Every structure is written in C-alpha cells, then in structure tokens.
Image (cartoon, rainbow, N blue to C red; front, top):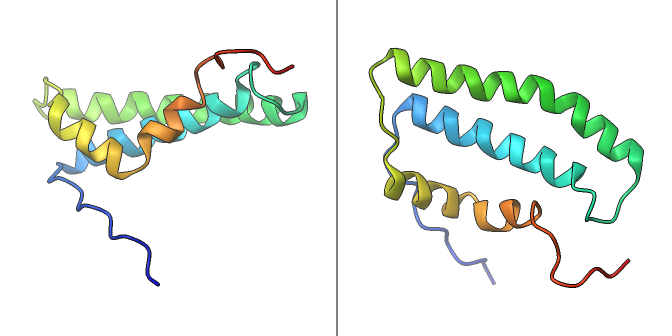
Length: 102
C-alpha cells in the first residue's frame, strides 16, 4: 500500500522557498538543543555549533527577499508550505512538554 499523497507545495518565489528551507533547518537544530528533550550534551553541542551557520543562511535568505522588494511575508502561503514540509511536527520539538517525564 502506498502512503497518502502529500498536498502540493504552494507556489513560492525562490527566495520564499529558501526562507522556508533555512527556517526549518534552524528549527530542527533548536529541537536537538532543547533542554526539555531527552538526549545528551554532545548532541546539543553539535547542533549549537551548526546553528551558527544555519542562522547566517536564514539571515541571508531574508536579506535577499528584502533587497528584491519582497518586503511582506505572505502568511497563508508560507503556513501551507510549512505544513506540507512537516513544520508542525518539527516545531513541536521546541516546546516544553506538558508534564516533565524526567
């Protein structure tokens, strides 16, 4: 049986697609650093080291958008793209659990 087909990504400019990709990379790293999640300090350290470069890439994506005159973020379109790319699950790793299981 085939997995369900994902909805198509909305039409994005190249700069918007870059913004979404870089944002999700930063989110994934922050999820690995989250002290409320199980893991070890080495994993968090490696993620924190990688975060520096990913944050620069995110800044650069936003800079390109701004310089090209894309001064507004189109929330509805970007939210749809984030949902297609599993953004809800990925950003959920940044929150505190309701009850610490530590």
